[in-house]
Amino acid sequence: MSETPGFDPKMLEALICPQTQKRLEYDAQKQELVSKSANLAFPIRNGIPVMLIDEARVLE
Image (tube, rainbow, N blue to C red; front, side, top):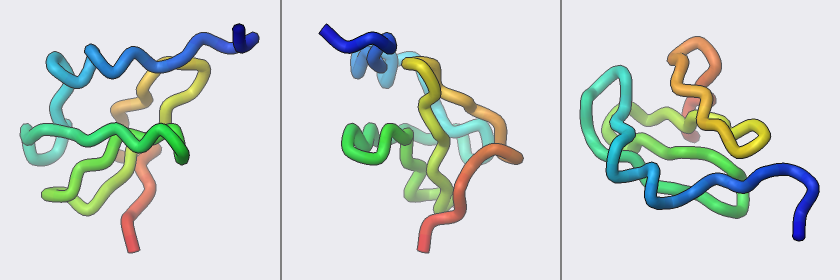
């Protein structure tokens, strides 16, 4: 078992992009929630998604 809590993919049903209000995709490898419509990736830290636009990474 890992020492840090993991993200529960079931949370995707309740989370939406704060900028576009559209669905997010979970990138398990990068530990991010991706909004293709906004071209942003929101980090997941210690199993908790950080849904702040200022904290998001712009997708290339």
